[in-house]
Length: 270
Image (cartoon, helix red, strand yellow):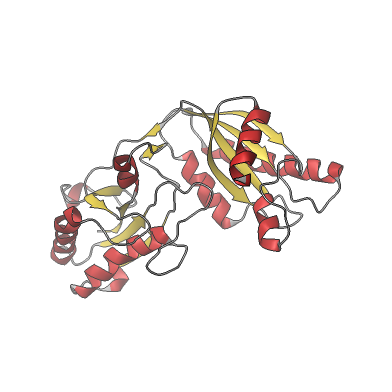
C-alpha cells in the first residue's frame, strides 16, 4: 500500500501522466553506472517506437539535503548523457531532474532498502506504447541469408508466468530449432530470455527454482533441451534480458503478457 501511495505522490509531483519504465541503481555516494545499468539503458536505446523519456535521480537519506540534491542530479545527468549517446531520433529526452532524497520508496532501514533509494527512474509519458514488430523467424529464414549478430524469433515459444516451462504450442518450434542445429553443425547461437510485467526489478523470480533470474532460466531451459538431444553446449549461449525488450508495453491483457514471455535467437556463428 505504501509503495502504491508513493507512486501516486510521485506522479503528482511530476505533473504529468506518466508510466514507470525502469530504474537503474547506484552504489553509495556514486553516480557511476555499473554494467547492469548500462545493459538496461542500452536496451532502452534500442526501442523502435517513438517515445518520450523523463529521467529522475534519487538518493538515500544518508547525506545532507544539499549534498543529496547535487548527487541525485549527477545520477540523473549521467543516465541522460549515456542515453543521449545511444538513442536515435525515435526517442526524446524531455526532462532530467534530481529529486535528492525527497522521494523515498521505503524507510531505508537496511542496506538493501537504501540501495533501492539510490536510483534513477525512467518514465515514459502516459498514452505512449511500445509495440515492436517481431524479428523474422529463425525457423523460416535461410541460413545463408542470416547475418552474424542478427536476432530472430522462435515462433510460439512462450512461457507460463513465473516459470521456465514453455507452453505446449511451442514444442514443435523447439524441435525445429534442434533440427536446424543438427543439420548445420557449425552453427552457434545465443538464446535470449525475456519476462513480462515486472518493471521494478531487472528480472523475475522463477517459482520452481526460487531464483531471481527467470529470463535466463527460460533461455537455459531450451539450451538444456538441445543438449539432451545431442547438441554440444559450446554451440549455445543462454542469456537473460529481463524485462528490457518488451514486444508490447504496457501489458493490458494476458495475451500481451504471454507475448513478452519469450526466448529469441541471436546468430553467433554460421
